[in-house]
Length: 337
Image (tube, rainbow, N blue to C red; front, side, top):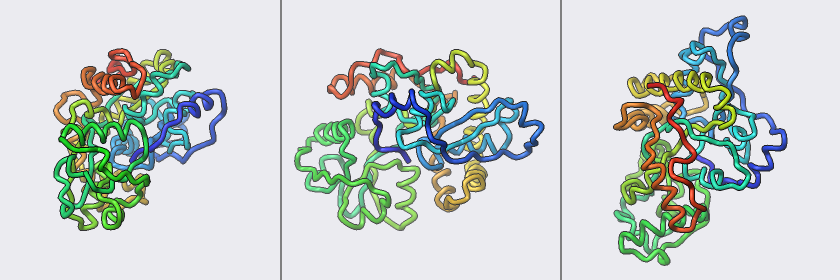
């Protein structure tokens, strides 16, 4: 559900080069060619292949919410170097990324014009999944177990933090460099623990008939309750087009609130728009994820500065990133009430 690499050098270079085209857009119902001519065209680039994180976009497209705001939204999949590359280079107005992956953008000497404008999900739904029979009930239990690592500095530092905070010895965790595409298969072979996003990979292992344990990062360290994922936009474009940005987020909010109120119907819309998805997986995933879009907050998309800052402070305190000023990199000003 996310890219597992982000190369700032590639992003910076892409700002001066043309980008290759990406996948096609979905189509909303009730459109006509004459009406389309009067719509403001917007490109939204996803972080990965479509999944229930993105349901609100597809509902807004299908139900005509974007069109009602005067917008024609094209949803595309990302180039190899990520959604933020396209947004920073002006090839897309909005994109999907993750707060943890934005740290190199915000600390780059290139002054990359990226601002997060909405939280798609209120809390970090990622965690470590393992088979219940392996008795990994807390981070310390990872000692002597095989963990599938992406071999990224921030990832490994977070793993070390949770293991050592639980009284464990991180050097005793077997780090197996492996990008897992099929979690159910990996857990039944040589991997004991995998970092997953539960709404997709967790549900898929459940549907595969596996009895699992999941430890969520937000429950292990409050600093790890970062925003994942977020909608980003080009800072310069936002300053010139504030009303368009607000219109896009108004329609998107309606899409996500539809999914909160009727997850089953939202799941059917997502599969209608992206028919290659499994309806069974999407429906169960949507049922689990829909309450997480807003969680306890009153305003969909709201980003709390204290939580936003806490993760970046943890990064800088642990020398994993240059310091990011408090409140930098996001805004709530374009969100609808």
